[in-house]
Image 1 (tube, rainbow, N blue to C red):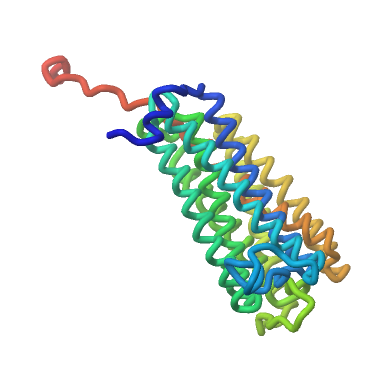
Image 2 (image 1 turned 135 degrees about the vertical axis):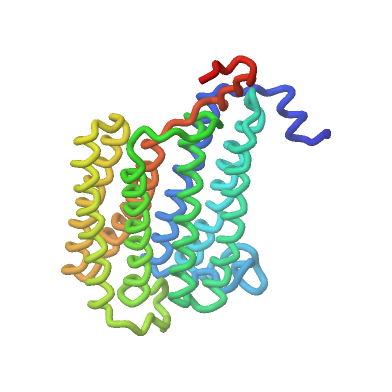
Length: 317
């Protein structure tokens, strides 16, 4: 069937390296949008644009009366188009590469629809006056985008054959537990923010009615659990002589978690200065990405599944 992408695929044949770079650009932008979203909150610009999808009831762009807060909020909205452009490049590169790997284009489209859904959630965030629960969902959805972007980037270095484990299955299950705990750690961080400092606007914003110190303690407990599981993975993977890439990724996660822990404690005992919170949000995205890469290093995927051997060629037992 004739489609614009099919027409482009007839004329452009990007290399595997180009597809991988395009997927990496989408991943980088998914992390950048988390950081710029944090900048909106930390500069109290969450209501810089007073409505959605317009910036004001009469204007798509901010007006001079809205000041710097309107500019910051509108700039973050415009960066969504840059993110979409990076995702489009990755998706088109995957579609036009030879051979065409539908699994990669599906991951590209998944990223696009995640961006669209999160744009709607962002609009609801503004329309609800920065409701902290909606803000938390907005952040979790952004981390979902990072998840799919990591998967697409990693899949560009693999084939589409059936995954083959490189370690005993219990180690794969340990990696899944580690990813789950890190995911809970990130989610708990959004609740701590929703109950504590930096509501996102200088106006009176409703906060989560849970004791801030208790939420921070639960967040710290999940951090200690994440570090403990990561240390266990370091020793176990070394003991079974797991692939070098897997051991390196676990060490990377440990380093990022320890840095995040230091940032978190400094942030807590210094009343959450903006620069520390911003670095902590960037670290959250990097920690999540580092955890997601570990299970993917414990398996291999050939280009294609081996062809079945005809029954007449199978030796009798």
